[in-house]
Length: 89
Image (tube, rainbow, N blue to C red; front, side):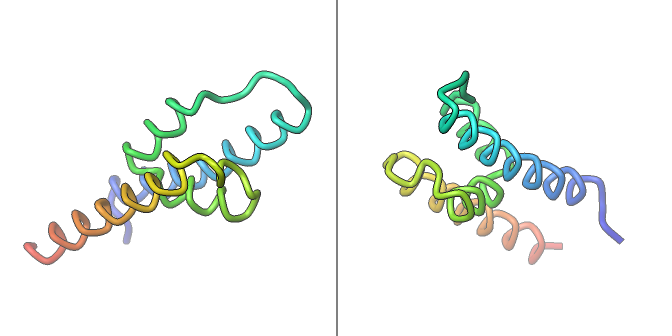
């Protein structure tokens, strides 16, 4: 059974994948976009896996160093924290 935090993180990651799709579509249509600060904030809050999957699926933000370097670093740190806290338990 999933706990509340796991449900929130899974939901956040699905949401960030959808945001990456939406932002890519908006970029193609030359319409208002989601700010990079918002996407990075969501990654730091736990949506880094979703941002990374969205980058790969939609080929979006792949030329921005803050994304192609930063998102994997954030994701790795989050995985290490997850492993640390689950091993302590």
